[in-house]
Length: 614
Ligand code: AGP
Image 1 (spheres, rainbow, N blue to C red):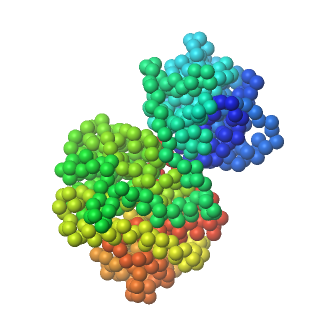
Image 2 (spheres, helix red, strand yellow):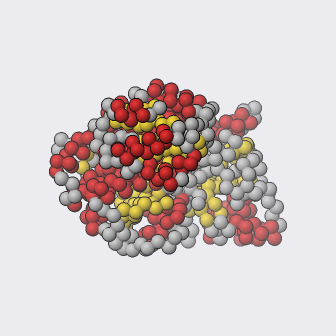
Image 3 (tube, protein in one colour):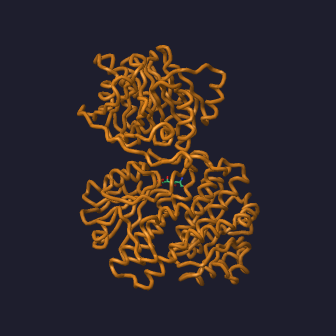
């Protein structure tokens, strides 16, 4: 996590960097800081807390300079305070540096640098980098770019860094390994650097995504030069951004999360584009087409992900197993990577990730690749690290998701997995023609049905008001609605700070039932389908203990409506597609509860959108 942004050119750097930091604030908001080069001096401005604190602090200061670096922090080493905020200075103030990632061998480097006479001001791992570069530059009498390269050869860990130096006012030096970094090149000869393209798109659409262990020098006289850590020159691959500026704004909604919830009819439709035609009876995921036979032949498919994306994988497991009869295992990426998993050339590993930058998911994929597996990706962010290291993949096309709580990315991931399952099932012959055709038609109608669910907003807000003061909540579902229950619980806890647990409904009686009393809201996905009667029994078990039932039911279902304290109807659909519809009311419920509790919905405490550290 942490967001980094930098600019060098003819314009005033401060407003560009400040705006960029606001765009990147989803990556962390423990502190924000900027360093600007002006009249041969590097001036630092840093503040604990959000970018707005920095902006307030800087308001009465005369901040100038045509080159600068900025950082928004998600604390790993050291408390979130002014001192630990980035940028960090070298002892003589001639170099300043911003960093996203973790320097794992920082302790030994720190001891070494202390022996060389360096005094550390912060508790961060990052400060070792700035002193190390300074030390190497002075001892070896080499350029700042060379010193960066040599320093990084001694570093274990993950980094995206940008370095500004007094001695080279016309250039910035940047590098990355395992943390993302994009360089924007404007027609006027200015350069922008950032953790993602959102701070850049307003100024230029020409970008270069740096690869691992590449060092970029942007120089106002000499342009962009990239070398790898072994000093081989790399020809920059300039790409055209597809991102539009409007997608990064709230568009009249109070929060990004609410906007993103309401965007789902469109984002699901975008996900279908060019991939689904019910009238002509075809479905096709172009990106993975050439791997479909391998998927059909594979002994198993392993899916790796974290958080909400992991929940999407669980839905995918149900879909792929039930429709295509392919054996699927879903793994937490963080566990998979450290478990010495049995993976070989015949395995297919699919990573699912909104950001495409999640460190654990990326590492799990790298491990699978090293063992010879075919690695595929389902990502939202175009050009992200996961999308670039995989053999093939499919984008979800949900558009930028800025709210830290994932909403439209989840339904888009489930949509892609549904398309994948249908395509494989049809090819493999595990689904009848009539079922295939009816499912395609039903899938095409899902965006309209999502709209109908969104129309329940007022009812959902009222229910939210009843339960806003709860301290605990239980979410229950069976089959593919179990991951929906997990996702509902995650949404509630991450933005409203209410403790919530998702459970397979039948598991409740093996423990969590002990928690149920008249204070406990129990959210149950009780739509019509295979387990309907079983879920109804589970509802009765909760009722018998005086728990409060909030049920997501199929339109027209009177029975559960009468049993429940509250019911939210969703349109009837094929059982396999219920997860997409049933998730929407749970997103809205969490959203309203969080707003009523006065929580920061888009930037919940302690979280970051893109978890680029272990
Ligand atoms: C979702 O609301 C969370 N903020 C989080 O669990 C997220 O899904 C997880 O960090 C994985 O992120 P990714 O999809 O970008 O890999």
